[in-house]
Length: 508
Ligand code: SF4
Image (cartoon, rainbow, N blue to C red; front, side, top):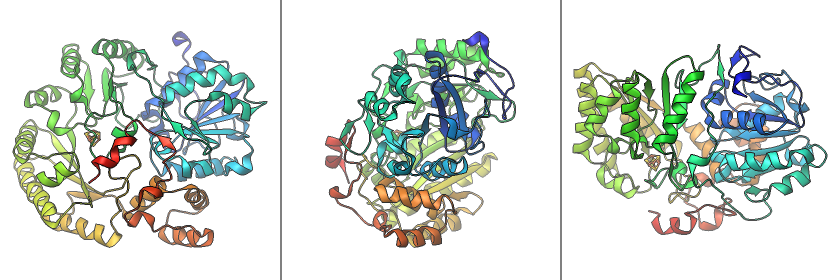
């Protein structure tokens, strides 16, 4: 297959793609976000190459930048038999509805009669599929590679009998009728990872040009608010040997000798230091987009500074030791200050993520965080480096120990944001707009009618007035994210994840 790769085709002037203008059945990979986000997501590449290689299907891709025409074939989305949609973020529900509407596909599953059949997967859709099922016919609860293997087995029956096709997929398929357990790959070394990744002459992926490699999945720290660690559990690593082989092969198909390392916490990988050494010795540039700060040693900074990466993105969430420990992410001020100083001294800018509104947060926790940030801000200035602090409210997520917690009201949230802005200066602070956090909470924690609400909002715009107006017309409660909820108010309790049986015991 690799030798038949086409160059500079379609609306995005893509290379590393295949040109197959006909095939049976027709499968659309839908990423309800920008084209750039779609090629930054590894599953886009996994699904595209796997389905092309293992089936005779016609495969094309759609994003918000090309909702009506496939990026390679230019075919319309409504001509396809199957839509595989990724929804890693809650608002992808809204954008999926918009994309379907813009491409002339009936948005509501009940009116579409499986033509085309829509299956949605990804972090947000897996964790709480209920609101997604107003749009999709099914959600897949598990690692997407398993779904791909199942799909190719039964594709022949899909166009004539989509219901029979869906039933054949078996385990992991959630349609809202029966309880479903998450299924997952046990050994990443034996799972699919493309060595060729779709690239475009017009648009680079979010983290820049290079080969993107996933070295681990899940996260062993299980911070109490973290969706990814609970939903992607168990934590699994690819071996150093597998990763090195992928890198060697993958670099043959990109324009820059650069590797972007995907992992929630790369320094937990037992082979990471050997991998970085290997990259440096072979003059391969690299980037680590996310790092758990307390896993990084000072000599790791020396290694990272040999790459072109100039910003360290760290997410302490809080700089209060007691609050940190209560959310499962203990904060050691001395160790953090040592690491941050060493990073600034080596020329790194620092970007921090802080979360406000944890259930056990008190004023003194915020004050402690502010005190540490102010010191860090002064230090950054002394070193001539840039510090940015991104503030987010806690958005409670299903299947995590904080799943029943409440979202801050807008007033309480903005009060905290203001505090940070006053103490640190507006140029240092960015923050998530409360409306977006509220919309995310509605989808993360909501039931089926929330899906209907967002399907209708898709044809308008995301505004407070439209949400309130439509909720009142549909008689949908939208106040629930703002209060503590009970165990009975978990619409996601029919999808079972491996740690569900213990999370109530470790809630705050
Ligand atoms: S370290 Fe980061 S990715 Fe891992 S559980 Fe904590 S917040 Fe999640």
